[in-house]
Structures are given as structure tokens and as C-alpha cells.
Image (cartoon, rainbow, N blue to C red; front, side, top):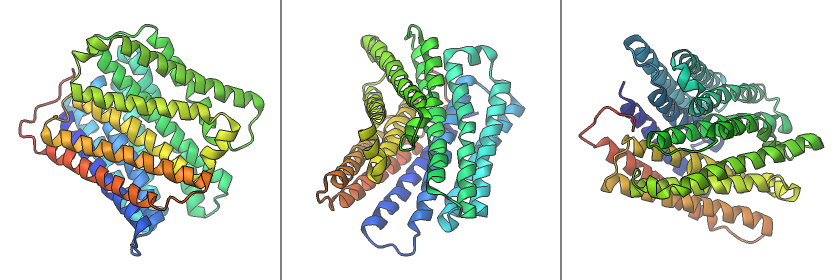
Length: 410
């Protein structure tokens, strides 16, 4: 199976997401009365999770675990990936038209069933030795947490369709879905994939199996970081703080250990890809600092009381951490070929990403400090434009590569 080609579909979806993101930002600044902002926003978020990240992550898991390598199994895996694309585009269209409704919820359910089927094939077909490794444990846990997040998705669908969405219940379900997608399925898998690359390049991390298990276990209590606005028993609050500290210490240890081997790493990663990885790592560090900061009650009130701050945090994780890590992995495996066009696309996209975070930060601070930041909307529109142009350029430049070879693990 040509994994690079299947990743190319996910990359196309990322470019399409940037177009939708630009339209959403344009509608905030200017008038587009024929577009329902809320419906398109739901379509954007569902397509981001299913069409871009889940699709890319599944292809990468197939790559490292070598599932679906035989004839019949390969056809089944391809069918699952194509079905996921079908469900993603179904959600994009149906959510844009009707928001939460029968058709959109059906497509959303289909994407969950695809992940469940993928999980079944992964646990059945991947080698036991791989699953028992620290890399396999991270990826396996990521898949399980991805399935667990569907509880929140089903609850959200029911609340929206029956129009019985109590605000607190809605937020509990929403953050449950987001947390186990972001911090479970996506981030654990990204860590596992990155450690796989390090291992293949003969970079060893002492005590990594124990630390990986701590990271896996910390995901469940850290859910309550998302709902600190609700009254929590002291013992649960202390558990949440401990989980945030564990995650910060584990990632800090990995970063420090990798940094100590930087000269060795410099020989195995291209200079441009090292920059992408450094930016993703910087975003991850900021995420962990914000996560620790949110355990302080006064800061927690600010974090959850102002929408630009929440949106900025979600974009930081989705684009700054997860997307950049996935792109860096794809570059290392040469699924993205770096030349003048693709490099330009990446630079423009990253510039837009940084500008986007800056604009959201200004909006959040203006709401807190009560100063005028009406220009921030235009700044965010320009940031969305840069990200759109950058990602379209990246996809076109990568698509136009004439020498397409079957992917090989490096």
C-alpha cells in the first residue's frame, strides 16, 4: 500500500480546512449572509479531526505497525481509509447545511465506527512485540482514548439534536470529546511516532517505557483540567495538579534527553525539518505551561472565561503541536518532499500560524484589560489568509512531484 499517497489525501484536506478557516474569519469581519457561521464552524471542526488528523494518524500507524501488509488485509485497510474520507466529506457538507441533524450525526457516527474498525484491525494484526514496546503502548493507548472520546461526541449529538443542551452538561461533553481526542488519540500517537523515528535513528532515551506509561495514565485525570470551572473535591483537584505536573516532567525529560544528543540528531534530520520540530516542541512547552497555569484558580477563571483564549489554546495544540509534528514526521519519511515550493508553503503557513496565535492573544488580553483591539479581527483574517496560501502551496508543490516512490521506513 502506498502510504505516501494516502497521506497526500489528508494533506489536501488540511489545505481545504485552511480555506474554510479563511471563510470563517472573513465572515466575522465582513458580511457573508448566505453562510451560517455556526454550521460552518461545526463542519470545520469535525472535518479537522476526521479528514486531516485522524486520516494522517491512521496512515502513519499503518506505516509503523505494518498492519494490512498482505493482499486481503491491505484492501480492508484501504477501504477503511476511504470510508473515513467519505465520512469526513459527508460531515463537511451536512454540518455546513444543517448543523447538528440526522444526516450529519449519521456521518459522525460512521467516522467513529471507522475508528473502531481500525482499532480492531490494529490490535488483531499488529505484532504483539510491537504493541508491548513503549511505542506500541503509546499508539495503542492513543487509539483506545480516541474510541473513548466518542462518548462525548454521542452525548453532544444527542444534546444538540434534542435541544436539551444544559450549558454545563454541554461543556462537560464537549471537553470530554476534545480532551480524549487532543491529549489522548492525537498527542499520545504523535509522541509514539516521534519516538519511533528517534529509535530508528539510533537515539535512545533511558527509562522511556516507565515515562510513557506515566504519560498514558495521566491522560484520564487531566481531563478535569478542562472542567476546573466546575466545583471539584479537593482530592480530585490535587490529582489533576499531579497529572499536569507528571505530563510536564515527562515531556521535559524527553526534551532534555534529546537536546543532549543534538549533535547526533543534527546528522539525521534535515536543517529545515529540525526547525519545524523545534517550533512544534516550543508550542508543546507553551501548552504545558498554560496547562499548569490553569490549575491556579484565578488564572483558570481567565482561561475559561474568555473565548479568544480558549480558541487560541485549541489552535495552539491542533496546529502548533499536532499539525507541525505530523508534517515534520511526513517530511522525515519524505512523504513531503522539501524543495523551493513546499518550503515556501511551510514558511508561509507557519508565519500565519504564529500571527494567528498573536491575534487571539491580543483579543483575549483586550477582553481582560478592556482596551480597544478592533484591529485584531483584520490581523486574524490576514493570518488565516497566510495559512491558506501556505497550505495550498505546500499541497500543490508536493502533489506536483513527478518521482513518486513507495514510502520506506527511515
